[in-house]
Length: 149
Image (cartoon, rainbow, N blue to C red; front, side, top):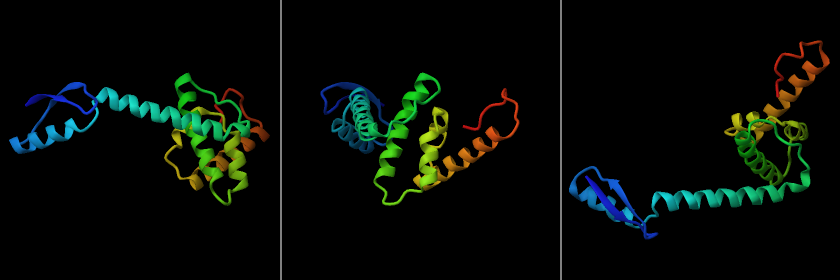
């Protein structure tokens, strides 16, 4: 059954309510206490933008190299990288080699692909990739082949 719900933000939205009558009534009462989809998404985006600015300001002194990739990749990866470096700053001891390797990673895709790793795993992966890149750089390889990082 579809029902027009007036949300806590004052906006009206049509919702499909399934289940028994008592379940539909309970769901309708709950929906009235929440924001509509548009307001909810706007709030989420504002919070994400605020966090990105806060993280960016916290790591501004690090003078990190620019990321490479598409505009969307760079925007997302910049936020991910800033968040990670902020979390690194709160840890008492950081693996120096892994930290330096993370500083050198400029591929936005790498940051996006490794976003689910723990801080320790991310540092290890960055160090592993740095070793691979140094091996490729020191050996005679075909420059047309893709780089590891």
